[in-house]
Image 1: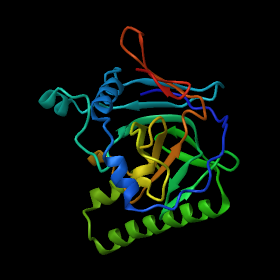
Image 2: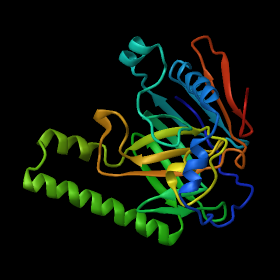
Image 3: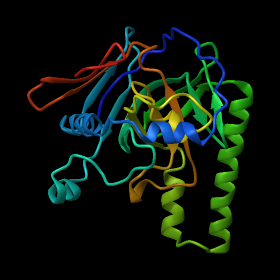
Image 4: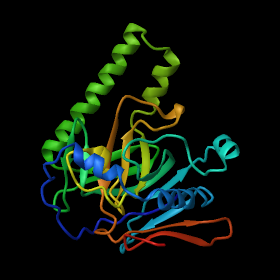
Length: 255
């Protein structure tokens, strides 16, 4: 996939709502299954490429590999992983380049609220990334989590508790980008649970660290959600003939 994200943000979220399991249950009841699978297939039917553009030239490029065996077996342009509540079209990107501005929530050891005044900003360089700026406390927790994850990996290597080829693979993927996703659940709302927040319709998210493919595993997976409507993002795919297939315009779904 290919795309771009700008960093002009528009509106501040209030503090994360104090909620309980009902948030997850409410999101699970969403009658969006047909639309979700239509959107998901549109995302995957774009010759593996899409574009994400905002009102500024700041852009992000991402390329994703389709699971051809699964496509042959099922006829579905998608993988076979998911969680509850449903509501995201996601991939493990093979390549991603540009700047993402996390302005909703990030999950490290728990979910932390973000906003446009002090967002979590990440620049991606193909198969690795760098945090450009972030709230001080959240960045401290982020770096702590990464250190603990790498220490765990080194401990596994020392104890020979995993085959060396697995250790080497996890080290290779440690600074990678593991997920790129469009959120699709219209009943999901901002709450204490990342698993719901990453499904809020019209928002998007990426994850740093481990991906969903066997060759993209590592020791952490940290999701960052950003607000496509607030950032006025356009999302479309380009097929082999150069035709555009729209998903979002100015952050709103295209029917």
